[in-house]
Image (cartoon, rainbow over all chains, first blue to last red; front, side, top):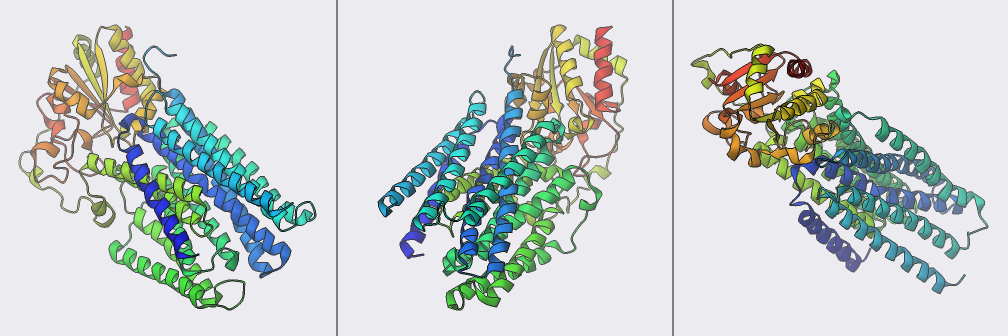
Length: 109
Length: 491
């Protein structure tokens, strides 16, 4: 990776960190649990990395440009990564929704 | 297909990643407000869908570019079939789990899902490592990959230990001898592993397969050491500190996802992982503030090391009261505040508490709930339980809202809470709790404390509230006690 790309990625990283801090700093305490489980679901974004890694490994395995054993291991890791990330994502979103569905105002039923 | 079309497709993918990031940002923003929270969660799930779609499209365009599309069935099966099958299986497991969990089991579930997120990032890094030079071809990529492994591994085993502690499994109630020394050593060895690996890359031109022997050793070392470190960091943390550690682990799993984005230059991973990391960190600091603890101390010092000896002086016996007498006082009360704690969750008393709340209100009494930010085992734990029992959220007040009016409250009912109502935090400088913001229950005209037995809370600190003049103890299972009070009202 050239230095420009690295700096650009770090730039994105730092700006996102500041954005995250600004977004969260004033959240009422009653929403702490849904916020936590909702952001937890977002951290399952690693599923995108998992799919990409599986595809790269598949490509290498089929084209035989690397060590086939390493590629197969990579595919297995990728499969498991997608599996766990999906549990995190789907479970996280549904459970957050269930929780938020219970928060009611006075008079709602 | 020509290369122009390919560039157009990859531009579309980048636009989709931008859209996904915007959905996440809006989602988190809306998640922070009570009336838009549900919509916020929906928006962020749409963002996730877009991001997954984009990575599949990227894969297809790469296959077209290399002339494999439509010709190589094997490749198609591997690069689309395998992730697709994993998504279906994982989706079904996640969906069923989320549907069947009891609300009282929520802290465990959040910890477990979080652990899966950390594990996924760890596996992504290992998969990237297996791909060798196709993904990691320089020291920067190697270092970020090492950090993904480190943080993902800590988030994984740390969350599993937190899950074990929350579900009361005995094997997680252990201690590490000289923990700071052990953790320091582990950290050092793990970083060494990352350096091995990074050096393997920067110096190697050997073989396309990867970083050479040094790199493989480095990666194995890093994985093992940080898996162990996750255990040793979290295992000594007590139940009452769980809200802090869960938020912290949440931040870590986000950060791991962000670092997993660096080697493959994937911006949506960096942005959304980092958003989660930052918001988790903020939540961690809010929790620390609510406990008057420094985060550093929590991880590296053991709590209660300087136990207060002040209690040795005068030993007063707390007064106990029968349910009938308690009912008479409650019947005359015009203003009641209920202060729930972890004990309410253990006794699963939230529905009984709601019934009590209803009969009190029928009796013309004003009922409010005072929720301390760290009551329970995760941030906002009490709010979720009471929401499940249909308590409207306007009735759930923070300690800051309730404390100024506490002297006008006829009866404060403390249900399974201890440290968060301990007046020693205000007036006893020798107490380890000193300086922690509490719910000022002791200012109410009468205080009922519903408690299982006579022991101290998780911190093991004496609570002078229990021996106050205006405090009466009602011993027994909180759920039964509350139900009996309701029965008294109905007669």
